Amino acid sequence: MLILISPAKTLDFENPAGSDSYTMPTLLEQSEQLIEVCRKLTPADIATLMKVSDKIAGLNVARFSSWQKEFTPENAKQAVFAFRGDVYTGLDADTLSPQGIDKAQQQLRILSGLYGLLKPLDLMQPYRLEMGTRLANERGTNLYQFWGDIITDELNQTTAEQGSEFIVNLASNEYFKAVKPKKLNASLITPVFKDCKNGQYKVISFFAKKARGMMVRYILDNNVDSLEGVTEFNTAGYYYSEKDSSMNEPVFLREEQ
Image 1 (cartoon, rainbow, N blue to C red):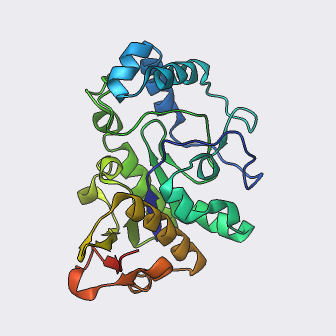
Image 2: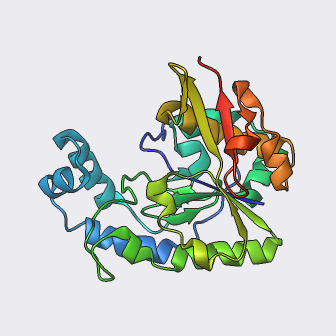
């Protein structure tokens, strides 16, 4: 079972990683092409393109400028420990055992606008380039056109090597749009998390993001390898609702917090 999640805007390159082990991203040549495009952007270009403040735009100009293809533990950090956001709060990678980290390295993949697809222990240098960014490049007008079938092909290669029958999609819509579902050689499972608010169950972004991370942790901790195993997820008060679910879209509900 392979699991997909999104990256996070918040990064932590100050604190030490939770493991000394590391690997290299497999799509660095593609990343280098994107960096060359980004280096031509002015701070004003980035502020407009990414809808960020002048301060953040300036920070990312500096990041693109200092990015280099030779990754080391001194200039880069393992992805699962570098990203800090709601999904990663739910995953809580810092408390994974060495065996848990090894399992995550096998089963978890992080979609990325710059790196395409990252394994948890892949080194990455700091960046901000969301998948939905309309960055003109030699392959089109946005990152979806840039990545084309590359990410999907990479996923198919991984599932073939591992014999994975399922891909659990815990990524946001923005990032999963970089994958071509009809070309995947594995069954797709997309869990949905709804919280009760004012008597109605709805997807509340903050809670749903954290729940996606908790689902990753649940799958890793419990060696889940089937749809039935996924539906047994019960962390933090969530429970499977069979009547609200479909075969490939299990729905989990939680009472008002």
